[in-house]
Length: 250
Image 1 (cartoon, rainbow, N blue to C red):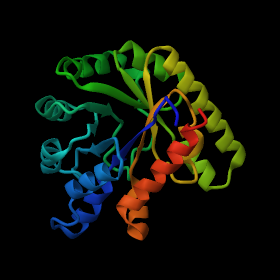
Image 2 (image 1 turned 60 degrees about the vertical axis):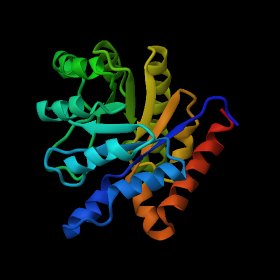
Image 3 (image 1 turned 90 degrees about the vertical axis):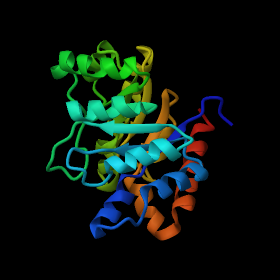
């Protein structure tokens, strides 16, 4: 077993998507969170969007009450979300870009261009004890800016790599993977904790899990989709197995 363990954060947003499609209370994201915890998740991720398209304020209230593992609260850099985070004081907050019309988070946060604004935004969150993570592309300029503003963690956007794999563009996938590898090492050299996520599947997780600098992977949509076919607990167990297998050789 590796002495450099890799954590798995399970994003439960799309359990809420299914619930909201019918307008009732089922399926319950809190039940999914507890099942994920029992199945080996090291943390739960939930993104409270401005338009509340999936996770609701009540979900965040409930998660803070029932979870034994840390909650990673994904949010846009808006005053409303800052106030919610300051009220709940989750273990971690991950600042992500957000566009009302997007289906999912489409890219990393533009930190370098908004450095002063983001520095002031995250300061109160750090003051109340939240670990602040910034969701960014594998780009040295953005990593340096995240470091300067006082973030403790970065989460590298793995979407371009995963898309290239699924589309059969091997050369592009290899380039994206090389960039993720290089920037993981660079961020680690600055003292940042490195996480990664977005679009990871059974077919794409192991190369990223093998990066020794990466401490946590956050995976949601694929696991919720796979749970339809095999159940949430087996879906998470298989992802955990693949991650541990990749990490064992690090």
